[in-house]
Image 1 (cartoon, one colour):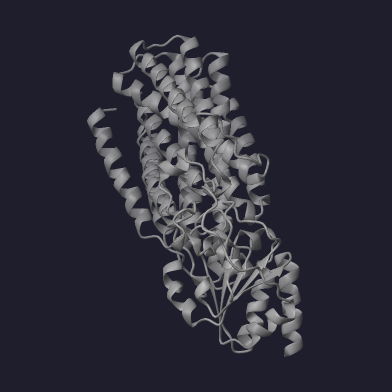
Image 2 (image 1 turned 120 degrees about the vertical axis):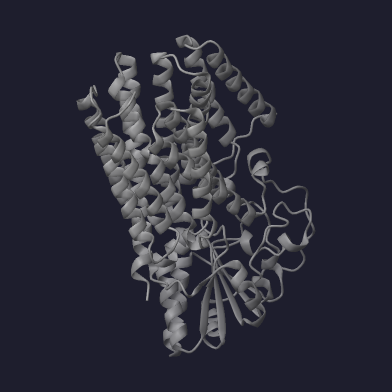
Length: 456
Length: 93
């Protein structure tokens, strides 16, 4: 269908603003302007679509826009910063579901298309549907609705068979186009189940990478359905996101030293007993911790997800300010996968008011631990586990870690003696220069602040 | 659409996406993932086109579903990204 020039122009402008917006988002100074520019692009593209001649169901359309848009707008305003990753997951899943539904209508209408169009419609529908149910599972896991990783016997074989069945049904739809309704229905059911089954066994620690992967998937699905609809704006936006998302997924996977295939097909479990850890965990009082840091010349704070769930970031920043006034140099060291997504911890610290020149990446800071008096670890675990460097049998072996163990003293604020998100015992806690401060991060930081104030 | 022309668009868009992300500091990875999540919310336009052509109740229902999901993707993606980036802005300088 050829569209009038003003509709085409609106879509073109939309695509242009998306790319400018994304470009803006790639630097902290222009990032906020970037999302606003992209937002205008979306408004222009949607408004232009209403001017397609002969458009039916306009009332229904406005209602769906209002319902979907306002529900997401309100939930997005309310969500806490710590819960952001699962919100991104669920919005992403919705986009995938929309792409799959577009294909479903194409199939249901049964318009005769070229072979290439039908193939891309099927591929887009498949990855869109997988992204939809997979993202819902990712949301449920991060939200804590689904607590355990569910693993079927012969999980990988089931995955492969389901994928093959989905591809086979898709192939049949291409060969027999226009396909019968039962075939279309069967194809979508299998694709949706595939997304569920593939995602269910993946552990929470790997979830950020999975969300990023599904984000790329949805982008590709949107791009392919854009081709089916003959709409360049959808193609451009979808493929740009697909490519960007794929790269982002690779960066994340690299930061965890887990190839994407491992994340999808190998569960993270402790393989055997591992190397025996010698030594014992030694406790410390809040007063001692305060004194150690007050009279140090350099302190590096390593925050983890435990700090975020305890909402301790404001207290930690208050503590940092007191230490700095006393002449102590304080920096924050952020592991690439601290929090639940790369950069998530930076967002949480920014929210608490920490200026971002105090926040260091792994590469920037790792050389400095050797000249540091105290490394304060708050609710982080796997990202400072020296076993990742030394113990070949450890499931996290090879993951780049923050070398907190090289500091003169290590203080760990931790709720209990349990293991980290990966379920791996942390050798750091047993070393001679490490002291444990058991308790919730927020009251513990408050206690340290009291002691620091008393010391003047 | 001309298949070969579409192939060129695919290729150039893929390069664009790659280039945009390649030089991004880690602190912006989460907002950028969220921002790209917002951008593929443009799927709502495709959903509107399909609903605009739907002529049976089943097609209308699926189309309604698609537009609502797409609108949620766009609106939710925007709000979440904007909130994250708002925090970066005021800390500068």
